[in-house]
Length: 192
Image (cartoon, rainbow, N blue to C red):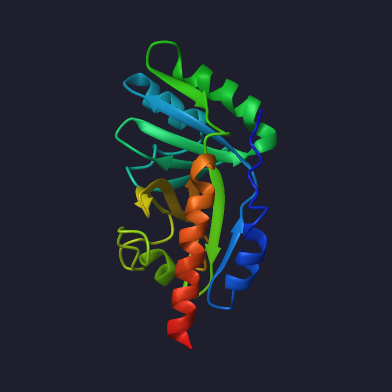
């Protein structure tokens, strides 16, 4: 069962009020999220199955036919794709990994997706996230596990225009949204 991954309830009005031309926060579409561990021969089998020349380095994202593959650690990856293809992708990845060299686990309900876009998105994130998000350091195709106001998140930027995608535990989503909205309001006040 997949959790409700949209931003609703008491935050709708606050999100609308805080959003402006410089920064917009919204709930992202629910996505399939499959956690992967691969070692030894499974690494090359997984790359072949994903039709990729290699698996991504740590903190990088590689596009594959099954979705975007995030490099989270030396042997840890996250495949993010269409929710409708979750079962097929999981089965395909389990076959590629085998029983001894890795694991594939459905984590689709473990993280909610938020999208922060706009020309001031980096400034908003800088108000509550210690990660260096300057364009020369955190470019399209990058990802990182970090914290946003003490809440663990996974953050990525697919293209130069954004949006930043934030993957956050559902139990912490209201907390993260509150911090981001405060950051949006602060950056907006500075811009005026």
